[in-house]
Image (cartoon, rainbow, N blue to C red):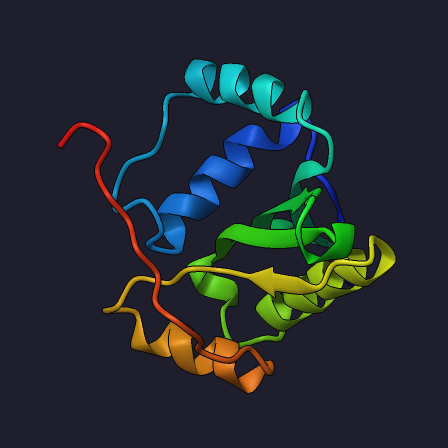
Length: 148
């Protein structure tokens, strides 16, 4: 049985481990104390949560969901999903799909007009996964290093 629920501070070591195991953060992760500080700051934002997918064996997946209020789009909120990761040993078992379906339901509850995400250009398997869930590639995504 898989449950998806908001992460707690006690879940942070497992979340950080999944970032490494899934390949999201390479072979290292944010130090736990820094993660605790960031997690506390994130919890202060309204409608910004880290979720964990919990199986009998423990935490097997995670993602962050930010639901943002808007003045445009007639006040309909929009949402961004970020840091989607499933433990490498558990990939291909429907966990990512369950997490994205959960995120979509949360967006529906809040009346969001869209749910978006970004994926590295090199992550072709991730692109195929998101397309299989009904996500569509649209527009261009732009980024800039603020230090440049």
